[in-house]
Image (tube, rainbow, N blue to C red; front, side):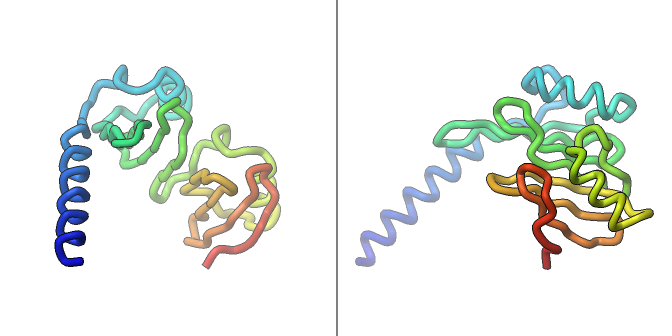
Length: 147
């Protein structure tokens, strides 16, 4: 059993090191998929790119973590679709948030901004400027306040 665990540990370590070696850091926006380039130029035109971390996964797929000079972080998938936008204390550009979510927050949380949004397999997670986390379905219906 000990040999099996040591072998398994060695395999995991090798895969981790090999995966890390495939990661790349860049400042060149052209390293991003076209859709990601368009999103950045359209919604963050004045914020330059500080750096881009490109993570190539062992079993396929690539993730792009873009840090803008103003501190905003935008994560993109292999196709260049955003998966998370974190604007710190600033509002996420409204055009990047589906209308039902924008409308719900405007109606129920007047004066608060969405400062972070992420999309997952079955839902959107939204963080408001007061720190409150809300979950929405993929169609934009309010699900619950997240603890």
